[in-house]
Length: 285
Image 1 (cartoon, rainbow, N blue to C red):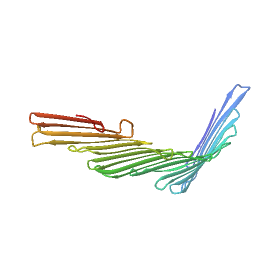
Image 2 (image 1 turned 45 degrees about the vertical axis):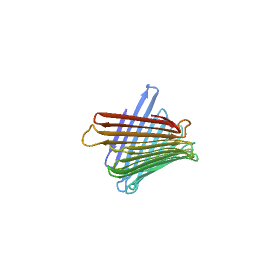
Image 3 (image 1 turned 90 degrees about the vertical axis):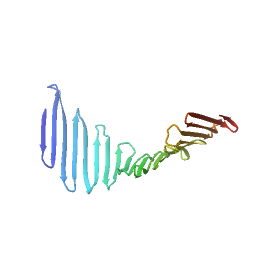
Image 4 (image 1 turned 120 degrees about the horizontal axis):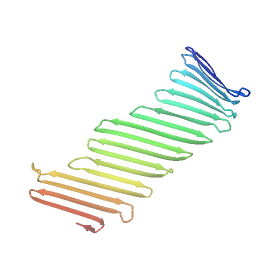
């Protein structure tokens, strides 16, 4: 076995050679690895490697070039003993979002293009990846935006996936205005189909309210409700509690359902009332 190594400020070169087998039938395997810096500013680095074993050879080479400050290009080539060659031409740029492209060519395959960008800002995050292969496009696009403070804010997020002409998208929004919260979520697919959820909640201890609506192709379901709490006077023994809920939908037999209840305390007297209705004129109290 033989080892050689050279190392200085601009060059790194290593070689390892191994002989194996019997005295009459010996074979040699070798590994060469190199890294050379052509220049510092702009940066230009060349790397290469080669493995030879049992009469077969694998090789790799790459050159990294700084085209401008925070702007780089790279060329990577890999060769296999079968004669197959793969090459990746890449660019990378920070401006301030991160942008990249990759053009991939492989022997006996159609070219592949892989590009995108990413903006890591927490209040306005964006990401996009686009892959092109055999005339088809595969796309993922997402973004996130946040504005406001803890007591009053609006946050939006969305994502879209496109696979060979078929698209699906998801969007969501969360908002707050003091004690009122709102949430909207929507899923779109097959161009014109959608599933949507919208809700609004008033998180008040004395008069809470909520609204939730779900929509899907040719159907919907909505739920609304409210409550009231009233403590009369300074004594905790005098109070009124009320609540109600209503369900409407496009589902047969569940077009409209509602319920309400109340509970009151007046000194030693307590009273509870419950009402339930499930169709016009049909009610239980």
